Image 1 (cartoon, rainbow, N blue to C red):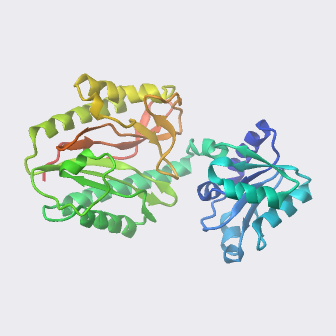
Image 2: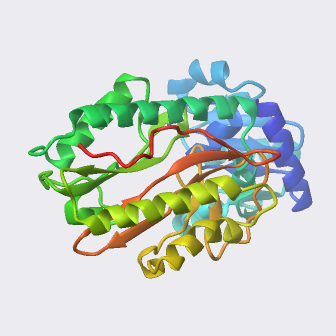
Image 3: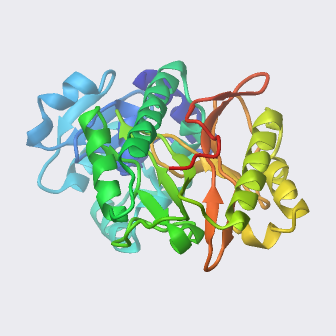
Length: 356
């Protein structure tokens, strides 16, 4: 795993005229090495790949980081980095500009003199966009767990419970079935709060005759799932059923027509145009979808501003919604893989209008 990814990263470094790069991002560190510890740096040099970590991980790191030379760094990590660079005669070092604060950059600059630091952007993230077969297996299991969690939710939702009580039971279910945690702060938005696209669970008590939107996912073996379903409790306002049907039509249309070679802008329009046709375009203010992987929001983007081209191996969400302030809202979301000929849907929870 690691060697192939490092080879691809070296090719990117060469195109930038660099022979070395320091990776500080924990997510990118795990992606390149397989190392799950909480501390460490990856140093990629011409012919050698280093994982620098501390004494706590000197047994674990060699077991996980196949193809890497594991080095126990000194009290000052950059002293060890400087020694390794000097050994290879390297005078310039790429670093992840999105993951290094100005204060840290200033410290690196001082500690690594006379090595010059060169900012690079998104080199590892560009590799992460494309999931291999092993990654897709993990993501399928994460999606399966999200589906199982939604089934569990339907068995426990009832009036009188708070959103946070439901959230806690969802978290417990996911963790008890193998998840490290939820992928993000779970959204349980009931009643008028379902009109909040990011209405994380609150102390609001679930009542009758309203909608509840659940947006959640499982972080499983380093990969995220992301599922949204909206259900009814009792007999909600007929306007809510109307927008439910529109959102479902838009989402199904997008799933039927998304294909490789399409831009994020074109994919977004598949859902947005239908919602706009029914007069609710102003009530769909977010993008249709986003990339998914080791982080819950990655590239590419399915938005009206995105020129990202969808290609086989990418995993994205498809999640149109309509939100009516003071009344409620609807969002329906699935996770999909772009294939050579179309898509494969990872999530499978029912989208039929469900009334409890």
